[in-house]
Image (cartoon, rainbow, N blue to C red):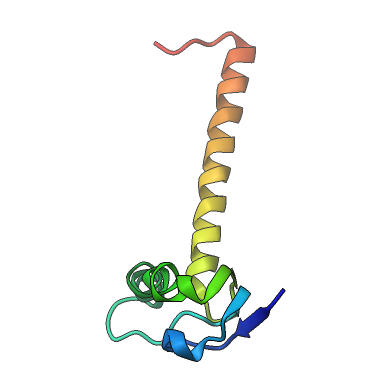
Length: 111
């Protein structure tokens, strides 16, 4: 198995011919840009992820790497923000479910 690793790209994607042919490409952190021209860093990283990184991996890179695995780095704030948002949604859903269980146990019924 041929494994290649890229890290600390900070939004500067190499041309596909700069990536060695491999069975597995590991993007080992700090792949997203840590500075954006306008807006919040998380919004800029989200745009970069969907408009640049995904097309790069699925398009020109697909012929050079059999599979791609990405690991978030300390500058990849998008993934931390998404994880926190997901955790908040789970907490809210859990709290709502607990209220419904308490209401059901007490015999209360919605009007």
